[in-house]
Length: 134
Image 1 (cartoon, rainbow, N blue to C red):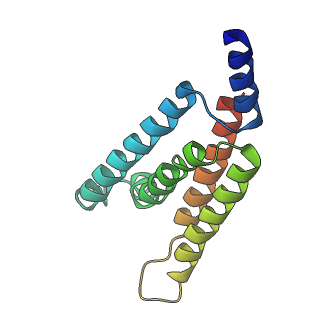
Image 2: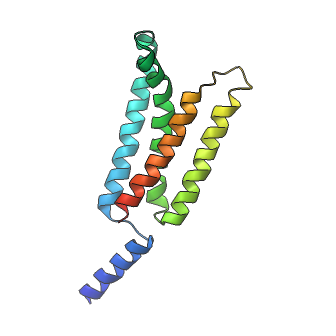
Image 3: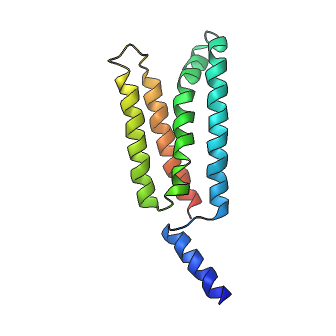
């Protein structure tokens, strides 16, 4: 009975119905790390602006990448099915891109680097989830 139960659980995990704790640990850790790093970058970037153009670009775009990647890290724990994950990542990313593009028409700061960082966060999440889900 134990062997059948174990095979059943593995089949469910393979189909995307459940997820192993190993996979969940990665997503929990990435959510926590991204949140902490985004807050640190947000607080420290005003002091570090102006040192280097490359550093300025990184400091300006890092929060967009980190916040989105952190939020996307929650999705695989709720929707471990790869097809539903891809759709959910695309929907959340579309929302983030809409916010970034909307800044062009409002008095906020529009930056192409933020759009690139948002797209990279989504692509990295999809790529890492395919590796972890194996």
